[in-house]
Image (cartoon, rainbow, N blue to C red; front, side, top):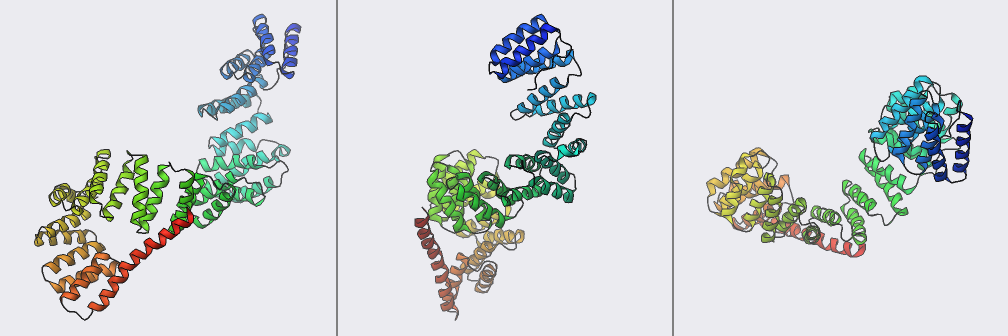
Length: 507
């Protein structure tokens, strides 16, 4: 806080102010406060005493009383520059925990500049606060009123380059940034002032440029590197983001959040095993973090590693049993593993947590089908064909239910409707071919399987049933298809074995 200036105070009031200032300098703020309380009792219209009392209250962490005292000083002396500056600074400090105080501080400095338009501190603080509030044009206008020597400070240049970037002058902004980085007082905190305001108002490209400049000059901490990586990630610069985040992780190898971000970036690069490496380390550090187990399980799903996916998702659900999405994912994996009773239980839980989501009932209906509870599957899926979100898959599963019930005409109708809605639905073609196979319509069956494999060459059901079709019809292609199916089945097993070896290494 700024010291009081006695001004036109009486001699005794001036003596009180001087004694109080001496006590504050000596570290006896409480003693100074007592002197000033007596002073304002005797001289209630001495603005300088109220201003100094406010400074003492602020030092003693009594912000509400301090603001009241500064306002009293301003009311007594409406052009008291020091009181405005003290009040504005206190409101600015409070804005870190109470954003509403930012507007109050801005208003205080605005009033100061109305009667003292060339006050350098007032201009700079107004520009800084307008900048933090995202009023970049207003901030820039006030910065331009500050004399040139004062504008060569790194902090002023940081605000200037951010204002210019945000108002559409990137070339000038880069010049200001270059000048800032050449100032002797530049440091990480100064640069982050600009970065944080730009990022908060979605001017990420220039925030990235500033953080890269910080890094290139050896001024970036691991936290700043992490922020740079996250901004690169949000900008879609995935390769750069991974490189930056990896560098940050070398300095913070046990930072779980950073490992999770790296796993997400690796996932976006389709480096699923790399993602699992990061997640395995994170899981060791935070074994009770359900989100890590969930993420690990979902990556395993992408690799068709259903056993590890099951174990991870089961752990996630155990840690957070009322997380709807964890239950849904576990149900899906249980379905793939043919743990159908557990799948039904998981989807029932999801439906109880998300009763208005038709996708939950669709998944439950599918689980009932795989549990061979055809009547429950049929009743659960029946009304979902009328919902555009679920109609295609509902038709597909109702087709499979009808086929298993021997209602082939109904099965064909459902499956053809699913294909009309989604022409690239390989599983629907595979199921359609299976119905034709049961009807001994071998020509139609072959065409359906071939279409499924054209869309998805590794489709397990289509490869299996095409092999059966060729064997049944003594087709010359049977031997080749047997080899093809054996390879598909073997690749499934190999992926699981490779994964298990990988997990043993990274744990």
